[in-house]
Image (cartoon, rainbow, N blue to C red; front, side, top):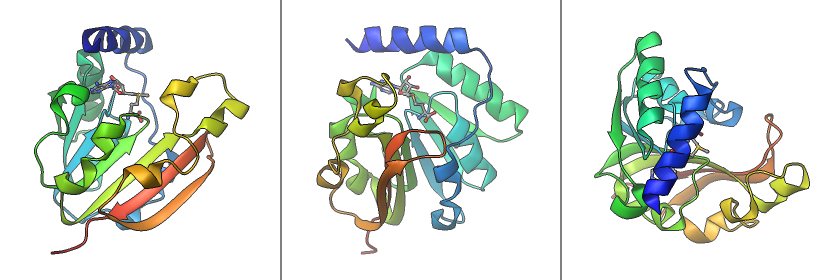
Length: 189
Ligand SMILES: C[S@@+](CC[C@H](N)C(=O)[O-])C[C@H]1O[C@@H](n2cnc3c(N)ncnc32)[C@H](O)[C@@H]1O
């Protein structure tokens, strides 16, 4: 199952090649919530559009993804941008989130409800979660991603627990996707 997943994404990234993708507009707009320094994890970060942006903001970034092709491209994108991004090839569905604590976790367009439940314990006290994923209402305008890859309306709030919500919103993005968007913090202890 996970090997099939890896092969699917490897193939997709081989076709894509070294295309530079911009970080999501909404993610960039959350800059004020980023820690000034510390360890950041880009969950299923693909070819690194967000990992590179986080590194440019001064964070020590690890990008975890199942696709070796994606990680190779991410390495190239980081090199071109003259920043350092650590890459970690892993099947998050099997291994769970890499060992924290993380000062920032960014999760964009990756659906795994079990992984979402690991956000709170993996964050350092005071650490921040930035999250963005399409909801079922995205089907009103787009056939893909299919239903099984989408969140139900307001479902995210039932999955991400143990964190203080700084902002939560569902709506159409600048990229014409209907997304659940969350910024949350682990309380200082
Ligand atoms: C839709 S892409 C999103 C990429 C990136 N987060 C972004 O927003 O550009 C989904 C990513 O999840 C990765 N992925 C899928 N299943 C995975 C798994 N079980 N473990 C780790 N990564 C996985 C894929 O390789 C792909 O890079």
